[in-house]
Image (cartoon, rainbow, N blue to C red; front, side, top):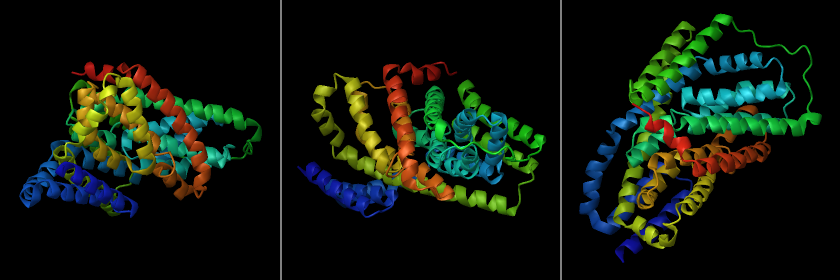
Length: 436
C-alpha cells in the first residue's frame, strides 16, 4: 500500500516539475528524495544521501565524459570542422547529390571525433548549410540534412548517450562503442539515401549555382594535417578499444591529446583557446554528474517501490513475445525522445526497464544500441529536436520548415535501421563478440 502511494505522489511531483520547466537534474533528485522519504523515512533517506552521490560521481566509467568533451572542444576551437567541410566541398566537385551524401558522412565522422550532437549540428549549420543552399538545396532540406548529420553523434562513438547507458546498466562501455559501429554506418547510409530521393524530387525546382561560385581557399598542408589527425583520433578510439590496447577512458585521453597537438600545429592554441575549452568542458561535465546523481537516487526509489515488478506482472502475457515487447518499448522511447533530452530519458527509464529486459532475456548491449538509434532520431524529431534547434539558431531558417523535412529522415531511419536491428541482432552483437 505504501509503495502505491509513493508511486502516485512521485508521478504527480515528476509531471508537475516537468511541466514547469525544471532542470532534469532537479526533477530526478527531488522525485527520488520524496519517494525514498515516503517509503522509509529520514533514516533510509540519510543513508542514501550520505553514500549514493559520492559512489556515482566517483565512478571510473564517468571519467570518459570530461575527456571526450575536452577532445570535442579542442576540435571545435581549432576550426577543424570548417576545414573538413571545405575539403568535402572540394571533393564533391559541384555534384549536388555527392555534396549531400558527403555532408552526411562528414557528420558521422565529426560525431565520432567530437561526441557532441548539438555542437556538430551547429557547426554544420554554419559551414554546410550556406554551401548547400548555394548549390541549389532548398532551405528546409539543407538545414534538415545538417541537423540529421549532426545527430549521428548519439550513435557514433564516443557517444555520451552510450556512456551514460553503460554506467546505468553497468556493462562495458568499450563493447557498447564497438557494437555501435555497424548501426552507425547504417544510419549514415539511410540518411544518404533519403537525401538522394529528396534531391530527385526537388530536381526540377532547384536553382543551380552560377559558374563563378568561389570555393574556400585552404592550404593543402592544412588538409593533410586534419585528415591525419581525424584518422588518428578515430583509430585511437575504435582500434584501441577493439584491440584491447586502450580502455574507453584511455582512448578519450589519447584523442584529446592528439586534438591538442593538431591545434598547436595549426597555430590555434592561445589563452582564449585553453580557457574556453576548459570552461565548456567543466560546464558539461558538472551538468552530467549532477544528472547522474539525481538519476541514481531516482533509481533507488524505483527499486524500493517495486515498480519494475509491478510492470512485469502487467506485461506478463507479453514476456513470451520479446519482439512485440521491444516494439512497444521502442514506440514509448520514440515518443519520450520527442519531448525530453536523451540523457534524461535514459536515466529515467533504464532503472525501470532493466528488470524487464533481464526477465525477457534481452541482450543489454544490443538494447543499448537500439535505444541510441532512437535517441539519434529524437534529436531531429519535433517538438524538442535539439539538433534542429541548433541548426535553426545559426542559420535563421524557420524551425517548422526544418522539422517538416527532418521528420522524414527520422521516420525512414526508425523503420529501416530499427527494423534491421530487431530482425538481425547480430548487426550490433557480432563485433563485440570478436573483441580481445
